[in-house]
Image 1 (cartoon, rainbow, N blue to C red):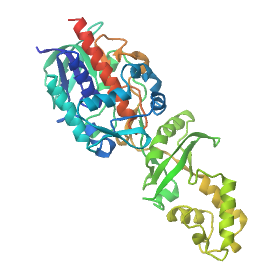
Image 2 (image 1 turned 180 degrees about the vertical axis):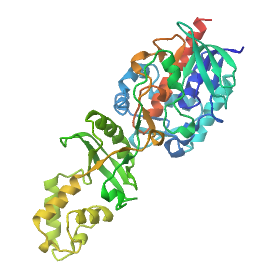
Image 3 (image 1 turned 180 degrees about the horizontal axis):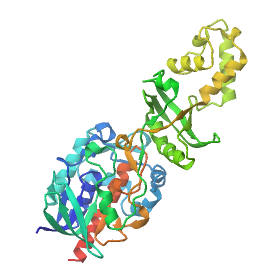
Length: 424
């Protein structure tokens, strides 16, 4: 029977980092993945460019990880986003900073990041097995003992790092395999839900595809509670689709829709679009009146040209029963006010999200209350470590989830190696 110090299950960002960290600490490491190649999620991240981390200050990064980001304070004190940057630069991957602190390889190719990690694993003599699904993890009363493969082979090990991901983006291999193994060790799996996911809507204008394919730039999208007060607002781009809405602002708001539906026991939640967020309603109304008065014989759609994308402008005019060819002289003040209100607060309902499989990130997972925050070690079984998306930690897109995966992977691998050496 083969024996290892550390067995890392899962070849995504956190598993690769965990195997490297364990290898650096002199452990005999096996990295095992059920897929045919490692780093599949990394290779498609950041639109194939791989947003490896984010350079914002740690406090800001934690704000961008609304799902238990605070749990990572201790981890960041051991290995921070700046350490991630130094780590990649030591591997020969030069990084560049883009908007909102996002860090990308200078090559703009995710594959160069994956290749550098694979080269490092080879240098550290980490053994790799692909196309090897794991069947089960074996424990005795107190600790991890071995791992059984689907093939029937049993591998003895001192420590296991579970880095198998969540349930989102299943074509990369994240199909929720790790949850039963965590539960078997006594861990709680908090309810799983999709985050960073497009929203669905049954509104007639969505069903009729009136705005399908239209994107709005830098709008403020709010999720409202049943009393009409904003729960969260994100100012970014968004897109209307044939099933609802998508785009960066929508992805960020999605988890708040899921939570609000649950909290208020409802199957619909109202969202609101402010298409001109840098002006208040009265200011906007006065400016529009001033502009329209200057050329009061002009058709209203021409007088308002440039205020909003044309399709959205015509849509809001129609919603307020304003003929686009009417002139300002013939337009009632009341209708104009109602149109301006929609520019600032176009409200409609959403009724859920696309399924978890279509989400970028899994919400929920192994409860962080049962994990030692500086080691990523199980509080129930010695030699069991967790990293990445299997944990109940989730952030917005923009390098935050990958940062969490790399930081937790680093700590899990390093501490698994130390534990294995101490218990030889």
